[in-house]
Amino acid sequence: MNALDTLESNAPAPRAPSPVTRHADPALADIFARAEHRAGELDVEYAGAVTPEEAHRLHAAGAARIVDVRTRQEWELVGHVPGVPLVEWRAYRAQRPNPLFLDQLASLVHPDEPVLFLCRSGVRSHHAADLAARAGYRHAYNVLEGFEGELDPDRRRGSLGGWRHAGLPWVQS
Image 1: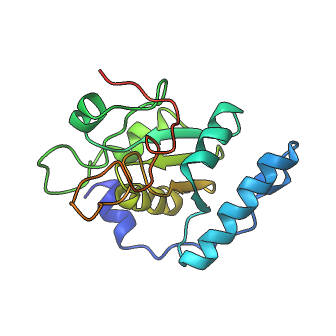
Image 2 (image 1 turned 45 degrees about the vertical axis):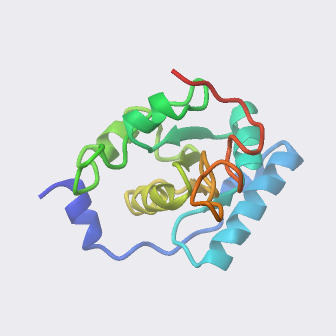
């Protein structure tokens, strides 16, 4: 049995008010407060949800760490946020989530630090934030829309939201 199996059987702890909303910078505190408000609207157990623009602002100010949870192939071929580490939620073609996800996350981010999870569209990052919260990360956030955004009517990503569509910094390998 691994950490993922153990956590899947445990009920999530109730969400406590976050001290990050008392951040020294009122603009950053406002972002955290909006994110936490969204958590209630979305009925999620993790700390909250941020837009790509809010994630960029928090990350650039050093108020939160972004962790990309896409596959290595997506990270390399589609592009990624400069300086943001990759911890795959699920490896390419894997049937189950990465059993080392929490260990790899712990090597990068302390459970008391605000962490923003980023994926392609906001789905895997939702699951990563949920798991992290259940593992004791009190300030786990999902980046809404992800790196590429939602599918457009032609079933393509990149034109309806997301990090790249917002014009935020990114690079391609």
